[in-house]
Length: 356
Image 1 (cartoon, one colour):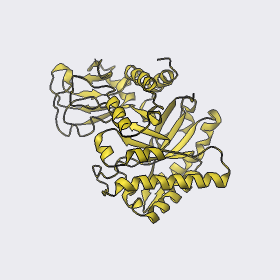
Image 2: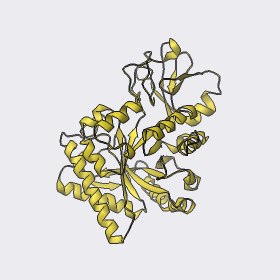
Image 3: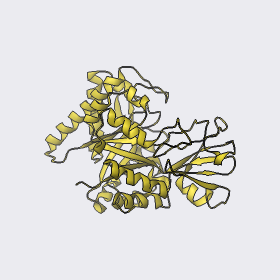
Image 4: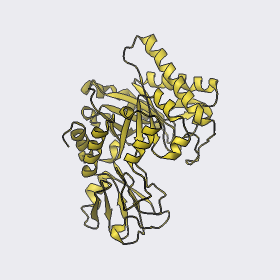
């Protein structure tokens, strides 16, 4: 039986020193993000020096494999509000161009695969271009990339195939915009983004990364519901990787009833908190009470008006148990640099080894 997946996303703009990445604890590392510009995969220059810095980081990634020969590295393409996918997927010619560019980008920088993070096909919620044709074109785009990867492997005489993965939303809206069974057939792993279920524009306090449904929020969504929804849509559970969050979502002005959970808050008062700050600053401050929802297997903090939903070691133990019990490929998380304490990753390492 293969070792369970423990995959980390790392935001390239947050990496201080590549040598500090705990390669020995991971099976896969997704380097985020490259973008799609004029049909090609590139590093974008958000600030002066960005492209040179990201390329320099890529050049240092092989040192991680010196410490963990089994580690697989992937370049993640896209991310929230990243545009260019719909145009790149539109025609046979544009898909072929994208596939050549993406695979060349991967190969030149020594990655073992590509992680597609189109958020989301057929959907313009992130203010990106979207077309109804995206539904079929996403499948065709992945097929073109897979074909290009296979051709490269043949040219190299590579016996181990390059990896093709994707990060996907776990709700019905995502399935409405893709041919999910056909998409899954092209992918090695399907990274289930089972977080941000209450996101940066929520107006009610709720779990953003609940594992199970809870009577506290009968209309809410959870990871387990998403897994079953996608299984019914034709995604093999053994390709699914369960998502965890190394950050919390907050909301101000929450009504002080039942610890704030399920209560309305002030619109547009949303906050984001790294686990580092939650564990090292907010909890030690004494301002917040920690609550635990034993149905959802999820914690939250509340100080009488500010509500914070997050993952912690206790919730991650339950996620690992669920991943094992349901036969999933493993777990992943966004994002490595959000936890300087290391306790969340250590919890996942133990949990995926069956020690949690």
